[in-house]
Length: 485
Image (tube, rainbow, N blue to C red):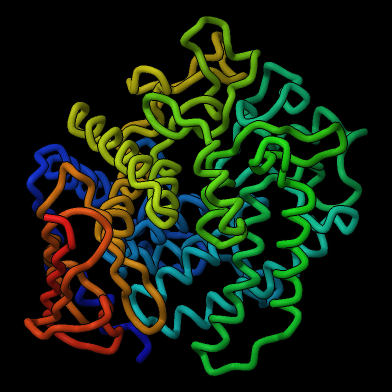
């Protein structure tokens, strides 16, 4: 099956959420509305004509590679697979007849993870073949240009951090520019000898390279192709380098940055999420990260602490350090439930839901102390004050991730969906309806509380495993009763 029939039928109805909690009920349609509103005609990359694509937000006119991958991965690829497919294609490019991932160079490899999630949601083998081709060529290119053989790590900024507010003072030496991409222009004598030149090596970015190598083997298996043994070897070597250079045993936490000047021991929220979700952290390390990750009153901060240059007042923070970005909240929420930290999941879930209901939208960034919409401080404007964009797509899909992968505990694999619900104490009834999945339409009902399943049925038939096979067709009524009532 090439997946074409699947994503052509995806938009015939919209999913809905019903729970006994009014804030969750109110936030879900807001998230869906923000997502739908940002699906607009767009043409670039491999698209020959404008197609419906998922743009980064109401105030952005392009998908952005990392936003595209994250939005698809967060569940947009499940709900709107046709738009997700077009979005992924729009950020690819051809060079000398070969396919590559486009966009900002350092985080482009996140596209591989987004494309794999799209395949798990749709079974689109044609797209999977393109994903494998683009990933192989892109990894080879980045091995030549950004791999540092001295550390065994890939150079480049943090996945989400295109602004200098994400980095220590040495990366923000001018008030003229907010973009980390301008650093080599102001520091030519300090640039790396090959590649773009930015010498830092970031936790989140290297986690994504590790996952890309790992996924190549799974892609090959799904396509019936032999796997190159070098992929698994490179994944193992990179995993070892990540542990060697980033793990700080004294602080029981991963470091944020490795560079020529001592790096940075700040906490990178997204990097820690990826280390947990990709299985890079051992079980012992995972528990330490869960325990030691700083959480602000509004949620997990993107980087903690903020840098002193942004502490102009007691309540000021950097745009990319100290502030709360909802897409990171979504990843942290899933990482928390996977490691049994229900209270940490619960905090992120209800914080973000409350913000959305209060504002009638999902904003790009929130203040860590007050939870108000807040753009933070960053160089590049006269007063350093920045704007938090409205109806940001990955903020909305971050909440969808909390529902689908968090409360419902949907874990997708090539074989199907495993359900591992986490029902917090405030929620004892949850229903998700009209959710497309490959050739199926899911209707999920969960009753009870906690994390232990008492019974699992599909279309009234009891199953010992909480698992829905990928090869089924038509309407699937999944009902789960949790052990706690």
